[in-house]
Image (cartoon, rainbow, N blue to C red; front, top):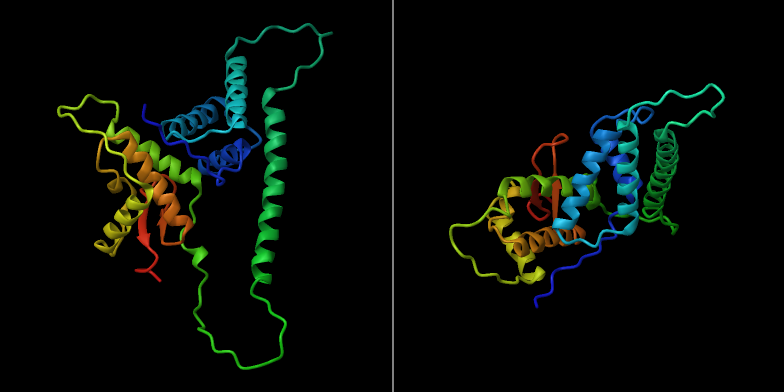
Length: 246
C-alpha cells in the first residue's frame, strides 16, 4: 500500500490566527461577526488542508465544530423568553473577546519581533570605517504573504483543475521527491524572469503531484530561494526567483 504524504507545518499559528486572517481579508467588523460567512470560509480552508493531506491539528477541528454549532444555533427560530428568565449571551461575544485578546497579543508579539530584528543589526565594537551598501535590503522583506494566502491560492487551483473529474486517458501514478520538484520549479523560474503564476506550477491532474509541488514551493520560500507577491486580496499569486530580483 502506498503511503500518502503527511506533512505538519509550523507556519500555522492556530485557529484564532486563521479567523483573524479571514476577518482582515474580508474586512469584517470584529464586533459584529457574520457567523455564517466566517464559518463557510473557515471550512474552505480546513477542506483544502485535508485535500493537501496536511496534518491538521485537533484545535482547528474543535474550532470548526464550535463555529458550526454557533451557526446552527443562530439559524434556529427565536423563542419568546419569559421576563424572569436569565439573559442569554450572544454566542458571538465570547468569540469576539477571544479574537480581540488574540489580536492584542499578536500585535505586541509583532512589535517585539521588530525590536529584536533591529537589535540584530546593532553591534558594540570599537569605532572603525565599515564599508556597506547604502541600499542594503533584508531578504525577508520580499513578499508579504501568509500560509493562509497560499492555501487560498490552492483552493482556486483545486476549483480550476477539477482533480476529481474522470480523465479520458489513464495516467500512471509516479512519486516525485520534493527535492527534485524544488529543482524543477527553480528551473521553470529561470526561464521566466518576470515571474510565474502560482497556478501554472500545477500542470498535471495528479493529487501526488499537486501535494509535492505545494510542499516544494513552501520549502523554497523557507530557504529564501523564491518569494510570492500578490497585488491585492484575491489576486493571482506570482512566484519570483530571489536571484533574478536580488
